[in-house]
Image (tube, rainbow, N blue to C red; front, top):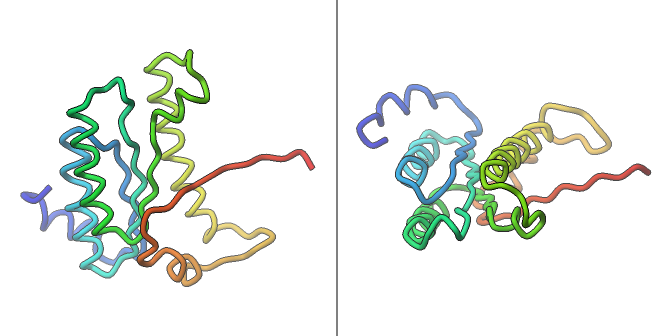
Length: 151
């Protein structure tokens, strides 16, 4: 990502809010995400990281890399939402690994969609970008949850 810094700047220029999503622990997400976030922040964008932590079965080295990347992201992004993949297996221990990865991707997608829809759709509580920014600028590590009701 460092080599592509000028290209990244061009793509992000003029953006008010940037979501940086990736799976931590490998080379691409762990290496590129902090660089992209840093560039976005320098351009004045609200930066929101939505990342997954590896499954324990992916090995100690991948987890170690993920923790390193997570620490870098914490110091750069305004708000960092961390999704531990192992929680998926706690909820559904018999889930095949490839299915668990697909579900983890869906969770990332839903997290971004949820924050975006706070601004773009109207509902019981109407928020604009200024409201989101006020809460998320320098928000630190965050949690995200979902719920459903029939009533």
